[in-house]
Structures are given as C-alpha cells and as structure tokens.
Length: 288
Image (tube, rainbow, N blue to C red):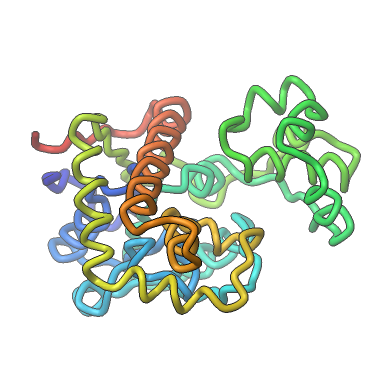
C-alpha cells in the first residue's frame, strides 16, 4: 500500500508509477479525501477493447469518482500523445481538480515540458516502416535522437524513424523547438512511485493470475477475430500471448509466463524513464 501524500488545495495532481504499483488505488484515495476528477495517463487504457488486461478501472472504481479518458478509443483507431494532450486541455478548462494518473512517461513529459508539433505521418511512410527492422530504423537515426528515446522500445524507434522520413528533420530537432507546456510542473503536485523490483515482481505475478480469473482469456477471445498485431491497441501486454494461446501456439501456462516476463520488462523500462526524466518529482515509496 501507498499512503496518500499531503497535497495543496486545488492544485492538479500527477501520479506516475510502473505497472501494478498501486497508482490507480492511490488516485482513488486522493479523490475520496479531496475531491477531483481522475484522468487517465496510460496509453493502452484508452482503448475500448481491453479492460481486464490493461487493469482499466471497473464500474465500482468509476462509481467512486469521475473518470476521464478511459476506454474511449476504438480498437482500430490511432491515438497519439497529441490526441491525449488535446483532450486533457479540454478537461483542464472544466471545474474539478484533475488527478492525472498512469504509467506512460511520455504523456507526463509532454504535459509538463511541452510537445513538439510534428505533422501527421503519411500512410506511405507507415507502410515503409513495416518493411524495415527496428535495428535498421535505429541505424538511420541521428545520435541526438538515439540518446533521447528509449531504444529498447520498438514503438519509440519507429516513431522517430517515421518523423525523420516524413519531415526530413530528426526527432531531436523537433523536440528542441517545443512550445510551452500545457501544465508546467511548478503548478502541480507531482508524485512518482518508486517501486523496487523485489516488491513489484510478486505483484505482477499475482495480478496476471487475477486477470485470468476475471476473464482475460475471454477478453482476448473477443479480440481474436481480425487480430492485427500492428495496431497500437494490440500492444496490451498479455494480449499477443493470450491470442497465441487461443490459436494453439502456446499453452496457457506458457502464455502466462511470457506475459509476466513482458510485464516485468515493461516495468523496468518505466522505472528507467521515471528515474531519468522525473528527478524533480516527489518520490512515494510503498510500505514493504
């Protein structure tokens, strides 16, 4: 458990943390104590086709406090950090303290540091990216861009490569011309959960078992028809593994093990991002 921190009246609250660290429960506690609107900052919880597998708040949680930007994007639809920022801007103009919670570090960075206004990527460039390996795309990037992106994250590599091909300018160059942020950090109560590996890994193992008990396999079955691994919505951790299980390519035990490994790897990337990019945020430590 993570104890709710002391927060200033009415100021927006930001809560970042790795998967399975308890950040959504913390947001609910803060909302119960001080009021507010819980706003999703997780790139996969926006999609309507995954609720159980992305640990999206269910009806009981949503009945306890207003929730925004959860499950509102279609399975086939594209959704970027730019889309998210525009929707958050509209929420900030409404009454109620926003409690913005999630594990997508890029969303928080764009919110508090600004986002480069990069033109949309043409379909032809996206198609060209499908023909290249991540290693090839990474080799095309300039050193400044490679130093800024998470080179262990294929989606970030691809995004940087597509920007270069579409605009003729490196992603780092676009970032250097970033406009002012929507919500500067100085105006927020910003917290990042520091979840040690030894504490987090058992929670990850337990949670995937709980997801299966709640119907994650049935949820995957509903996504089986027309499954397209290239869609952003298909990146829900555990989704590809359960689809493979349903197709007879993996046993359920094998799918569970692979999904747990993928979740631990994702949590490691999240912790790395938070420690590198959120050094001025207040750190919250779970009670061990």
